[in-house]
Image (tube, rainbow, N blue to C red; front, side, top):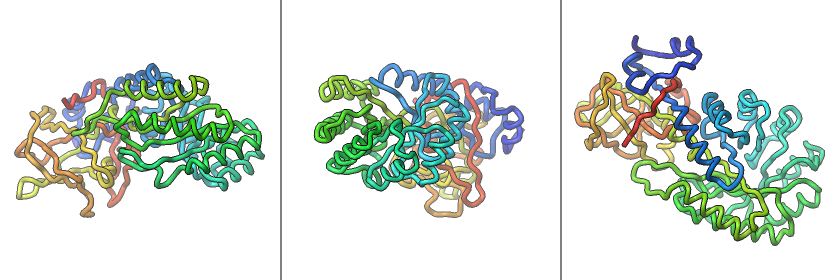
Length: 394
């Protein structure tokens, strides 16, 4: 059985669990991209957050809204979800009708606020300016049961993305927003985001200290402090402290600044789901030079982040279902589309003498892989399959 696996997969409703990547390759020899999902890996990471983070864990759905991801997280004990749109709200409620939803996209259409509030019971909204506050108050008729989460920003620290370039009020404005919400009689929270792939636990401490100053100046007591996401993953050439050091730094600073009296929440996306999914791509062409590969997936598919940020994914090459030893040959890797930007930012170190038909499995594609894939040029995003054991990329 070779080629597209979609028909066979859909006939089995996506519930079958294959042993590993080798079993998938040997059974299907897939010509199309495949996402390999390991539920055990995701459940283990969810448990690490639930046990270690000193507060409530809310999953950032934008990182990967795949149904099997949401089901696994719910089974692991996650009941809070950070949502950014109506489709994300509907998707989560379809999996977990009693989920606690936090509509924490700071800028929302009036219609989205209305449907979220009136039809889906959402009572938690983020904002970073007065016009958004007025929208929420108008739609909800100033319902005092609504939680208004004011988002602030600081100067950008080392992270893959600077969220402050798009969202967040300056501290002075955050003070005024908190006071305005309090004056309206509604519930109050404060949030920030240190940036995706934050490599220094001390950054969270700096934001928490700023949050304490904002709260003191506003003269209010927020219901919670949401520290956002930013928890990093171990991409190639990335040196990181253990996740527990982040939790410890956050707990210490919170105790010092708030005496443990204000509950915390976090919103992991990348740090929660990245390691649970790999992308199995197929070599469709090797240029005559022998050092340029074309794959059936690229930056318009599961590796969109490679067009905007320098993250290097670990890779395992498979030939006829057998793993090849790691290699150091340098290859320029292109995707299948006719667009010249469809290429990985850096050369990839792979085994020498790569061949058409080899499969390259890229790890850490659980976050912003399938979630950001497109169908540009008619190339369809990959299909999900379940595996019992995820590949050890060494």
